[in-house]
Length: 148
Ligand code: DHK
Image 1 (cartoon, rainbow, N blue to C red):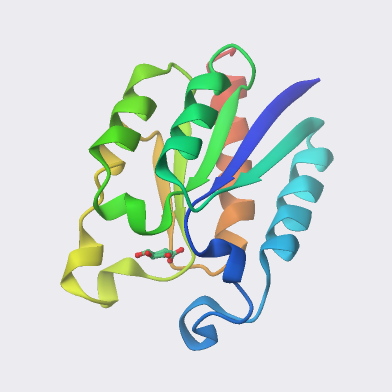
Image 2 (image 1 turned 30 degrees about the horizontal axis):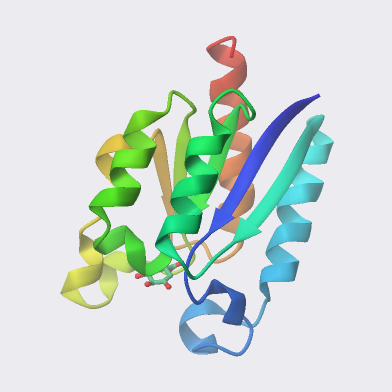
């Protein structure tokens, strides 16, 4: 069975308690369940990983090559700062979809720029946790159409 990797970056372990007016009341566990169920509907297996540490996220991205068909990735605050994560995404041939729960374009100016976007296969922004489901549907369509 083909496999997807769900990667979540810093502070997303606090979803549910963290700024609920911005990020909603659902938890990381809810997201993992939603993505697992969506992947399952389409006969994909899911591995989920969250980390507050840049290097651990990079290790996961590097290890994805040859092991997964696509990555659903919310890099959280590292979106706006991390050349190292961007380089890791660039280094692999596995397509990466960038997800943001909030609409980063109607918040602070610094959230409008993504280091990752130019090397991503696509972005889903501002649909709350449903964005993760949309990202799974999108990436599987892409994987299948490219015969990966
Ligand atoms: C999550 C974060 O933690 C922020 O640092 C990003 C993103 C936005 C989100 O909306 O999922 O700026």
